[in-house]
Image (cartoon, rainbow, N blue to C red; front, side):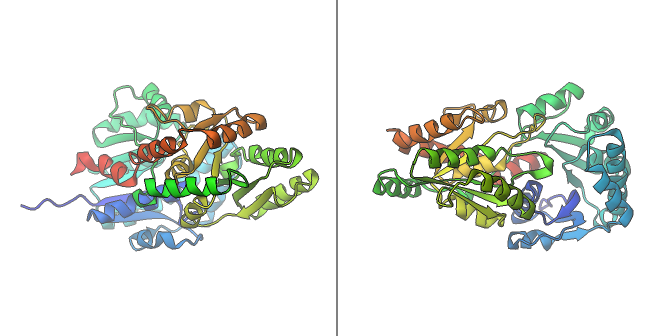
Length: 391
């Protein structure tokens, strides 16, 4: 008898489509599941963000109604970290998840895929015969893991890095745990030929007029991604008359206003620093490939232990990638390949690493090693590895 893949409900307790990173994870995962003929239903709050890249996901998406009371409780809950905020967020999220029950009952999935431990707990308690995949992207919801241990026979955990895995095992030491890091599209990884074209372009300019950039969110969820390092670098270039430019891409309207106010005080000419607004994910990937050097600063939040998709996307472009030296980023590189690293918030160190990279005799091999490294982190490999126990 021919094997029939399980029906999968991908449940997000937040709006889709979205410009946030969880939207990329959802979109890419669902596309791989559909490619492999799984029957999928995406269940989420309705989103008001437009990106043509979400077209395939929207074909299998059904949104639960979000009541004014749920909106109020979640909005208040996201305003701070006090107990009252947590209680408010919990009430709003509970209302939303309950509103998804009708869709789930109608779809009758064998597997539910979530990324929120509280949502996992509600759904495991309500749907007693389904298996569940829980991605772990942070250290929130410690209390919920004390209850999730009672559902271990139907639940598999997929933390996105070692730090998240260590957090989980402190609360559930005997759980089935497998790291499932963030990934890139295989087709977005450049070839060796593309790397050689890039090197030829650098040589044709005698390694001058270097275009340095950051592409991504500026202050998502209230924490900063450290783009001040890029602003300080542009100021350093201007002060020292270095012919290189910095481009920061991804700010929303409020962020652009704040950054421009700050820049007017520094009086940095536009040649040295450009600000560009947020763009779609596919456009962002194309833009990365037009730059010469990509910089990823440290997150300002000391509690952030996620895995930035942006880091892998940077390396996949075959461009020089300069990363802030931090425990989180260091934990991601266990083999021979490591990107160039600078001391956090040290503009002299950042400039030195850019120059070291440009002058490296082994730059070609370094870029080749980078695209080889990132080839192990594709959404295809990640998604099908997670699905192994169910097929």
